[in-house]
Image 1 (cartoon, helix red, strand yellow):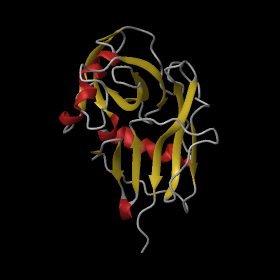
Image 2: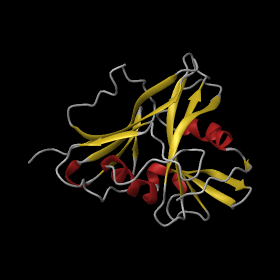
Image 3: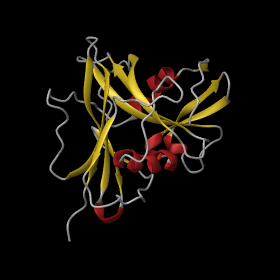
Image 4: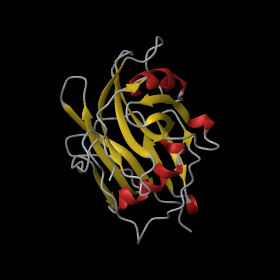
Length: 221
């Protein structure tokens, strides 16, 4: 189980993201750069206990309307070979020392945990407390048996999200620009066979809820 260290991190995660977010095709904030605040998220455990995995939600007040982004991050004690393009930045952790923060959609450790999360084989963990499940994170899977497990960590960014492609055209789509769901709950597209949903702090102080990840079936033979 991942241990949450309550210590200093320099630069902070929000400072790293303030520099990195404008380089993303799904960034829709103001021209002067993001004005970020932490709005929620959750963690997953690395089975090997080496890599920190966090799905962070940040609110950006820089544009005409506040926007909330989902930012999956991984934290490593050494650089990830071949992932220079996915490096968000480095920081000094008060307990663990230097950490390399990556866009988690390009990190095979995070990608390998997404399907077990959707299928209910792993539990989302609280963002700020050790050994504490996050009950606000929900998931579903309606496929036949276990989903394909060999999604690559080669992610494609679009204007609203990031897509990972698996066998037979199956895809995982991460919603980077978050949309609050109607009162009845998240609405899944017809081809969806699984999802992850969660909550975050809306700019008006209320709790918003919406889709984080959707698993789409591949084309039928």
